[in-house]
Image 1 (cartoon, rainbow, N blue to C red):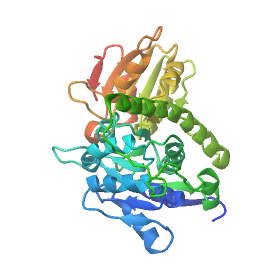
Image 2: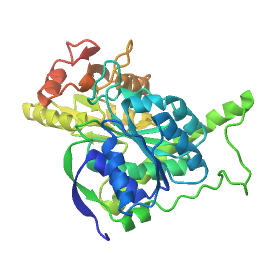
Image 3: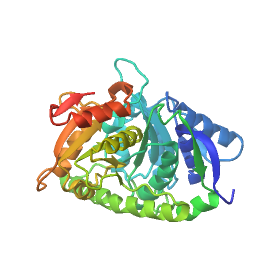
Length: 380
């Protein structure tokens, strides 16, 4: 294909196409609902000779990521995917990947975590990993997922940190939409072959994972923090470059109808589409409401959040996740980002759609209308 092609794809298959276009050399994956279609289509690409990658199927998600790390350290471009309990099983190795500075890209399909057992959209799985040193993106649609996986490779390889791209189970993973699939030539211009100068190579003689002194460990963590700071600029640069090639730019934040807003709804993932409809309905009623979509959660774009919400009296934060004893995670992230800000907005948290409960535009309208009488955190 020399030009982009429009295909009817669900979110998972859009991710598979992104993986194919990124041309990774190694793809270790373990099937888990609702991520399995990503693996299935990748194996079809491989079987048809359309994807030149070593596709591995280890015995568990822990082993999947354990296979990703040495492949990345040896200089390979690496992709994987998981969901829910699979991501939780990787937890130990997630820390090792970031500490090893392995720029793996992983798609995660946000799904409820056990127990009890359920299969609905809930972002607790990935948000619970926010301190593991991975760049974290959240996408709203199949098109955004395809574009974001490609951007994540560019950012991860530039700053030498792993990146996770998450989208909601079923609302995105299994919903069909027309998706613009770029040509291989376009992607090659955006994402040239990966070359890792420091790698596992007998000619170089480098190694990873050694026991170090306290001061060496401290310096290593400082370097990871510096890389996260660099990732914010890298994410913005990658988005601008992708927009120049395709006409599609997503930003690290999206402001929708926020001009002169008295109240702004903040959300991540598929809830943002529902929130746009609610904002339109509220504006039609004369309520000055806007939407702030948070696409990049790690590194958290603190300054951009402060600028976007400056002068806004009230903010309603929608959380499709649950941190027991604390409430909504995005609310807490926003509270930390705005702390100490002069005339900071009043924050109102809504546990919206936890466990996959359906959220309608009328629900969001009601939460916005009732913000002045609501408790600091309410269950939607």
